[in-house]
Image 1 (cartoon, one colour):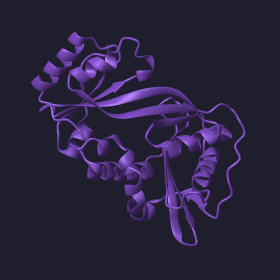
Image 2 (image 1 turned 60 degrees about the vertical axis):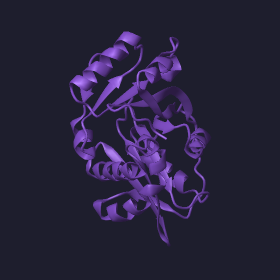
Image 3 (image 1 turned 90 degrees about the vertical axis):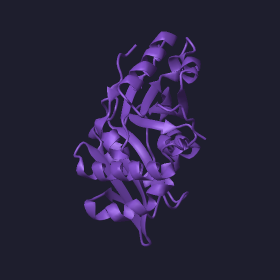
Length: 244
């Protein structure tokens, strides 16, 4: 087991709630009862729980749900072997986003918000998912270890993507893509720019992608990414309220 619940000051301030985080891998019934008692003793409103569902040989997922950790998202992480990449042609041109692009990006953030686990939990809600994504984009533009890319054509902004270098696995990681013109090669233009930006001219990982978002999974698979691990995201609420 991973130990005690970690407090999350940024999330707590952002949502005006007391929020913590815990890893649920290997949790026994006693562990989960202790987490529940600790969360109440420390007066957490919500605790994020993460569980490696690809290695759940002991049915931990069943136990966590019986202890008030409710599933809000199932996601997969993808890796990319060293294989050729040939993007589709596009009229959209990609470039690195600047602070001058923030207002235009904010207009299309609602497209991606439903794939957020916050949008899937009605205790946070879709509006919270939009707010969270907007905050992530603004932070990404101002963070030198991250990249926010935009695409544009004669009509204006056609999409944006977020990436990290290094990502969660210590290698360049592709995190999200949002496009306003599906089927026009916009996502390919965004990825091609990322490959040029990433050290070594390639990207070897993709961040956690919601399995509900089949479009992005197919896009990544078409460009050489394969699923390497899976994770369930759970939310514990102090009052026991469920989602959906």
